[in-house]
Image (cartoon, rainbow, N blue to C red; front, top):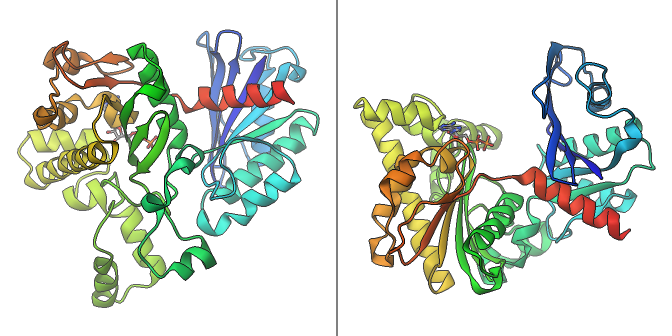
Length: 401
Ligand code: ADP
């Protein structure tokens, strides 16, 4: 069975064609600058590449490029489109409606559309992607949606409520949803596999640290709390996002600077975090390099990040009543070993002990344990793989249907 996995954004669409017999990636690529001018990139599992500018006015035109590349004489990986058994889509916001992955039908599309107020940038693009997919592949190829929020849907109400008047929860569904759920689900499951234990016997804290970052407490395979909230702005500081702050900071700056809600939203989402503190870059590599060369604001940014990760691990250890394993994943979690070392050095009170050499060498695709045999908590680096979760859910649902 071959599954096409789609991650549709407003101006980009990433894809992977996965052969489920061995879960290998047959081809992957990205349609960039959709609706602007159009740039297409495609790489096959055996290293063949295509990259060119091509007009893509909308998601349907982007799908035509994907389709053509998949069956192309030079860079194709299948003979006939009929070999694509099903298509799995990543969807950012499933709200309280979608607690698990679903086969797409008109009612599911309407459900995703009804959640647009909660994800104004993402859900419209996902709907465009799904509809475009139907245009190009036809109604007979089943489509499945996998939600970033679904893994977090087990959170208890005490964890997901905000202490604003209850009516806003009832009227507008204002609550914590959490994001990166597919990644937290993959790495927590993989962590249990690597430990050779049943996830139902484990308390795991998963740290997804990328451009966007979130930390999740997983008890017996179920999420009990997560750092992102109503939107992906909450939690620890990120590339350009603030993470949590005193809400009064928002109204205070708005009043002082005469900012509109939309301008303030831009400040919180695009001008803050690593970029806002360091004044250098939103990319951890640039900021960490500047910090090493003595730039004080860059050093402050990296110190703040490590401090905030430490605080969440402490809080979630309390929530879980102990912790068996801590997992680092995503761009920063997988590659920036010095943050891992500095955070874990402060977790001695939990009995955490890191093997400095394994940690320093455990980058660029490394998967494994970075804690010592004496450590009371196992610490892992696990490269995330959201696509494989989407492909597995798609295959399972289509198989059942
Ligand atoms: P996104 O959240 O957009 O998927 P990533 O998970 O790729 O982002 O994370 C981006 C962050 O990870 C950046 O801050 C970058 O510095 C860091 N990062 C990504 N790849 C590497 C790498 N190979 N080495 C060091 N840091 C990396």
